Amino acid sequence: MSVSLSSYSKDELPKVLSSLKQYKKMLKEMGGRASTYFFADSTKNYRAEYDATMDATLAESYIIAAFEKHFGIKVTPADIKITKNSSLVSGARIFSGDDMVDVTFKNIENTLKQL
Image 1 (tube, rainbow, N blue to C red):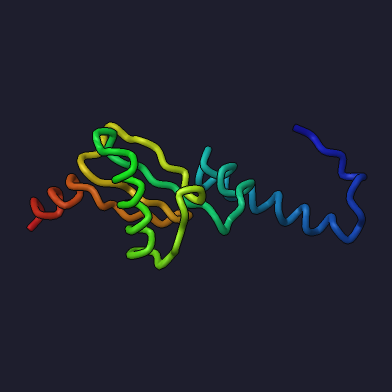
Image 2: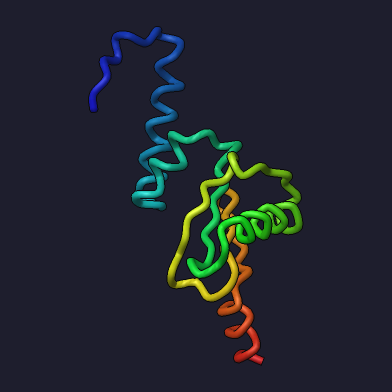
């Protein structure tokens, strides 16, 4: 992908340079996820993964309630990218930007093993 810099005004070029430096830094620190965060709307980067054996409507309501409880965000199903994850055991992982809450049975089990 290449874009001609001549299409930008002299006042816009410092902003473009700053954005390119930020993207380069994100690529170094985040790898492939950088493009997801850099090009996506930063205010609405909500994702969730749930156990593939759970009912989709139950998982959806569980995820929305978890967003409200853990992040204090009221979201609709249209705001969230919800996917199934067969490696999870009964529950969900909820992502708001780079923050993650693991509300799965496996996480609870691992916590109890450490006690």
